[in-house]
Length: 113
Image (cartoon, rainbow, N blue to C red):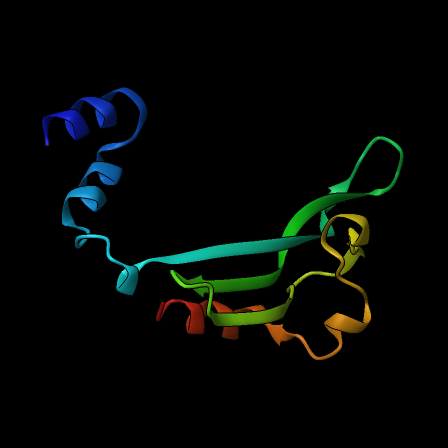
């Protein structure tokens, strides 16, 4: 406990310390891994060149358990207009977004994990 207090005071906020101390013991049954892929969407305003400012938005969310079993894997449709699919980085195409789940639905369903 003292090590956590020193580490948290030096590097993290007190909220992180609270989470560490209240989180149940980590076992294979309660460990998940989360991976997110992002797209470029139309931001607010324009840059110096007259192009729209680009922001990142969630495009795919994948969650696996300790054993690698897929718990959740969905393509997510951002709320803003997509201007860069970033295919070279994430492999997501325009076709993947046709059947994507709206962001509002995903944020609600992921909160259960």
